[in-house]
Length: 475
Ligand SMILES: [Zn+2]
Image 1 (tube, rainbow, N blue to C red):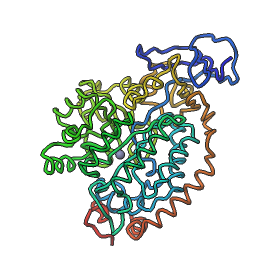
Image 2: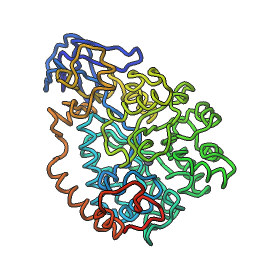
Image 3: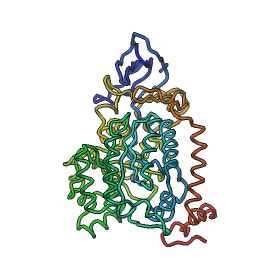
Image 4: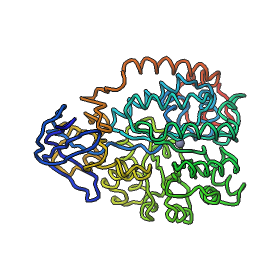
C-alpha cells in the first residue's frame, strides 16, 4: 500500500542512464520513491492518473533572493549599482519580519506553481535578525525543499555603505553576524526540508578578516559556502586594484574554494580561475536572465562544464522577473547558442540536467533528490503533455526544455507530500498571501522615500532617463 501512486505516466527519470519510461507508474511511501514499474500492485491512499503527462524531477533554482519578490518593477533596465543605491537599499533597509514572511510566501507560491521543488536563497537582510527566521518558517509551511544561506554584510552592500542617508541598517557587526549565523545553522540545518549554508555577500561586502572567519565557521559546521563572485566587470577591477588578484583568485587565497563552495555568477572568471574552480570542486550558480537584464555579460558555462565544474541554474533576485525555471533553462541554452554560433553549444539535455540532478549536486543534495530513482526523496512534478502547448510524442527533452512553461505544471510532490494538485497550491492560501503581499508592497514602497515615489510617478522613460544614471536627478 503506497501513500501516493502515480499511474501510467511517461517518466523522464534524469538518472545516470537518462532513462525515459513510457506507460509506467511510481509508488511513493514515507516521502520516498518506493517503486517504479509498469504495473504496480498494492493500492494507495492517493491515486493520481498520469495518462497524458510527463513526470520529471522537480526543478532546482540554485540562487535567488526571495525578499526581492516584493520589489519587482522598482528601477529597471539599469545596471546593478544605480539600481542598488537608488532603489534597492532605501526599500530593503526598512524590511521587517512580516515583510520577510510575506515575501517568502509569495515567492513560494510562484515557485511551486512553476515546478520548482528545491531552491537556494541568499538572505543578508538582517535589519532584524528575525527576518531570516520568518523566511525559514514560511518555507517550512510551503513544503518546498530549501537551501537557506545566512548572508553577511559588514563593510558594504555591493560597494555602498549608504544610500540617500539610509542603508547602514543592512550592515552588521562582525561578532554579532558570526554568533547569529552559527545559531541559525545549528537550529535550521536538517530541520524539515532545510539545509543551511553561510554566505559572504561578495568580496566587497565583507572584509578579509570576516571572510576568513566565515570560511572557518562553515568548515566547522560542515555546511556550504556561497558568495557572489565576478558577476560584473567592476568587481573584478576592484579586486585587482585592492588585492592584486582577480575575484575568485582572492577568495581562493582565503580558502573559500572547495566541493561545498558555490560561486554565484562567475561571469568574468579567467581561464586560470576556471581551472581553480575545476580542481577544487567549486560549483557555479548561473543566472542567465538576471545577467542579461543587468548587462553583466555572458558566463562561460560551456567552458566550465567541459572543465568538469558543476553548474546549476538560478533566477537571482528581481532582475529575472520570474521564478519560472523553464524560462531560465531555455534562456541559458539560447544565450550560449547565439554566443557561440553553435546550435549544439548547450542542448535540451544539458538544460534538463542543470535544472535537476546537476543543480542537486551543486547544492550537495544529489544523494536524496534531483532524479526519479527508487530510494530517493519523491520530489517530482507532473507536466501536461496533452495540450496545444506541449503535445507528447516527439522527443521529450526539447519539448520540456524549450516548450514547457509554468502553466504546464499540474501537480507537484515534494518529499512525498502533494503540495500542488490541479494547479491549486495545497500548503499556502494563495488568495490571502496575495492580499498580504499587496499590502506589504504598498507599505515598503512608501517607506522607500522620495526617489521611489518619483520613479513611480515618472513619465514613460526615453533612452537615458535620468533616474537610470547614478548621478541622475529625477525631474
Ligand atoms: Zn544574487
